[in-house]
Length: 519
Image (cartoon, rainbow, N blue to C red; front, side, top):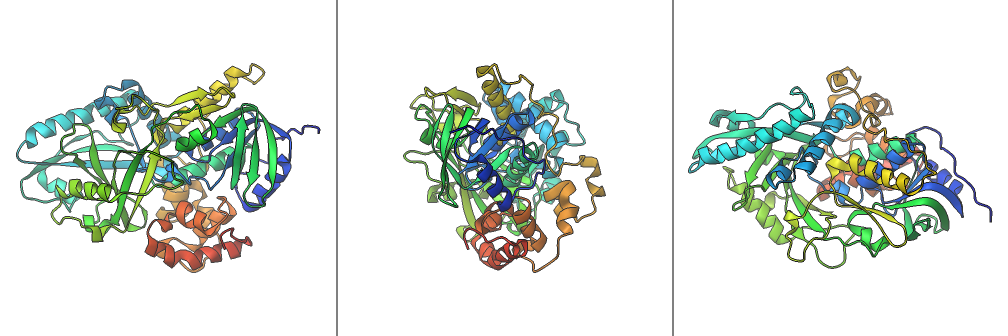
């Protein structure tokens, strides 16, 4: 059988069921591409963007939906590396600060913002604790200055008095309060939206982004793929295959040894924390570098996290919180609250799995390095493991560099992604110029006006509009109701919100002329 070469796709960034069908049909049986990426989380889509932007013919396959796994279950923080400084990992701390800088100032200003982190200080020991935490924040601010993130984007840290502490974090108890320390870090509006934006940007550079396609088997030179929609099986030849499946990497490559850990968050009403728009940061008793955070989120919710629990046995498609983790998070945050939270305040929970490189058998997962690694199996598959969401771009650059080093016939162009804005990106000082509501601008950036121009219709729960749901189908590649509710809008995170939004989601597919896969 002759081998067909897949050319560059039209430079539209829109993902849709129709585009998926066209590109899967063009791939055919026995097609050849330059790079096949397996995995549609932040690492996989980042690699697809880097490879496609360098002119490589790139296909990404994901057996579920974009951001189906770990990438939608993060803390939504764009970390500057402060925690890594505390453990002596200066290199990864600097890398984190540099990548945070790019996200905040160039690649995704519309999807990120500065988040104030308030550490309340109580007697006894308020002065000593404040000095220690303040020193840590100052060191972190040194990294900010070193990578040239402006103070207008991330302000400098500093001490605040009791009145300011309670004004910013109204839920904290006043008894014994001596003030607080305010630091700053980056926050994503939504981690799943970042994944979709990177995937669409890759599509704009010609990458084929194929969800609901499972890699049944892989070698260093190709894969057998199964289309979970049609049932079709096809073979694809590739000059390089990259395994970016995170904690599931060992399922494709038995040579990969990981020690996954579970990070759990609680979802509570923001009003139970006084409507606060800051991160209340509470030291975990007995630790000098670990905290529990409250994280203001969309839809009037606040997330509380995060745990770090080793995961043994088979890796599930979706992780779940344990009762012990729920109790632990409530107990820590309640040490600083005037009105303690109870289990009845917990609307839902979510948990993500971190793909940490295995260390010694007795290593605690909280002590394992978050540095990424690129491993080559005996079959020639490159697996990208470790790392974290903030540094996805650097991980992708290193992965594609590794691909090019192995094959001298590839063009040796350096990665351009440090300079590439994602779809919707707009200079932060000019976001107010976009002709759309501030809420839409925060979610869609320069594309907000196009979202708002779609026909209006019934509102879904928590203020998500009919236009947003239809945009998710027409432009963001949602193939089913779950894709819309769980990843394009996050309405599915709370069961009551999901139930209230089912009809609106189904109507969005009807308006777009698409039958949802889970209808």
